[in-house]
Image (cartoon, rainbow, N blue to C red; front, top):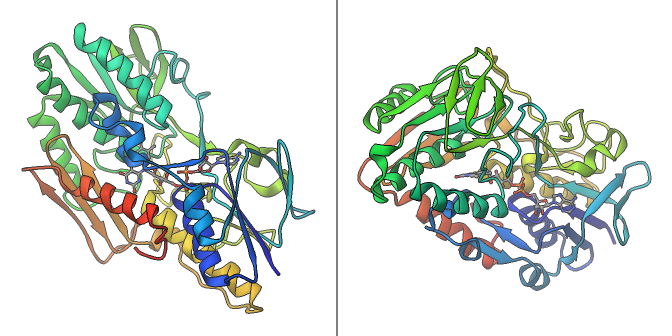
Length: 400
Ligand SMILES: Cc1cc2nc3c(=O)[nH]c(=O)nc-3n(C[C@H](O)[C@H](O)[C@H](O)COP(=O)(O)OP(=O)(O)OC[C@H]3O[C@@H](n4cnc5c(N)ncnc54)[C@H](O)[C@@H]3O)c2cc1C
């Protein structure tokens, strides 16, 4: 009987554990360890600050899903992995494994910019708690509006969420009847609008410029933030931007325990893998989703990262799970699917509008890439939310 341990219970971990168990059957043991007991549909957190979603509406307890599938669940925080001993260590227990799948996502990194920490001078929508806190700030802001700075810090990789928050914030200001009192500035390390960490797509820059013009939003590209003070942003080029509300997406590192686990991760705590998602040093360790190390294949004057969205997170988990099953069954030829060659499939919600982003590869070269604006109504992201919540609740991890 093989023992497979999965760390993480979100897009990648849940998919990886369910797929490994489905393919391995009852003769083998799959255990999922997560420090959180709910799957939270993170893409909808951008709506929480405006009261358009409650965290409970987008949260699903994972224990019943796992139990039904025959996967054991441990609600524990991993503190260390000992790769030489094949052990995962939590505060309370040690878990032996034959195969390990690390799908523990990221931790936020605040050291690059003074004042960036959530709750210091900046709001964030990266976690349910951050998004709820951003709502408290929004409710105060509406009573006494003023200038706003929204964007992404140097080193960040989740530009799409920041763009979505920007356009939703602008729309919320109009709905609240305060738009004429709010000057909005977008700051981004991207060299051009719509780079998104994927080197842009044809027509994307022009489309985003048109959005900025239509919605009267100032923008600064190639920006590097020196410091966020109580009342102003100071950029590295000396420019100062007064603000009364700010939401800046921070850079990410890998999960904290990775750094405590010898050479499991790189210097940022991400897991180095080959295209089969197998660790470059440890043959029985795999990684999926945000946890995977993925260096930008492009260069830019200000450093920032490549986004690993929900779809590539699930695809990488499926490939990793399939390869673990192959090894358990004595096969040696592993499947490969490089992260950059996974198709791009995303909807950018823009308040009461949306843009569908589709490509055959996440990263260039691409044979097919299209950005389709829908200026009438934002239905795509709401549809995806309902679909993902249904798919997760029913444990149908094998579906797209
Ligand atoms: C605001 C925002 C909006 C986004 N919008 C979109 C979007 O519109 N579309 C899209 O496709 N993607 C979007 N993304 C990206 C998407 O959320 C990620 O791709 C996805 O969450 C990655 O899944 P993951 O399983 O790799 O990691 P995560 O979702 O980060 O999950 C990590 C898991 O590991 C667990 N864990 C971490 N550390 C430990 C530990 N020490 N011990 C035990 N368990 C641990 C956590 O509890 C969690 O269950 C957005 C991200 C953000 C922040």
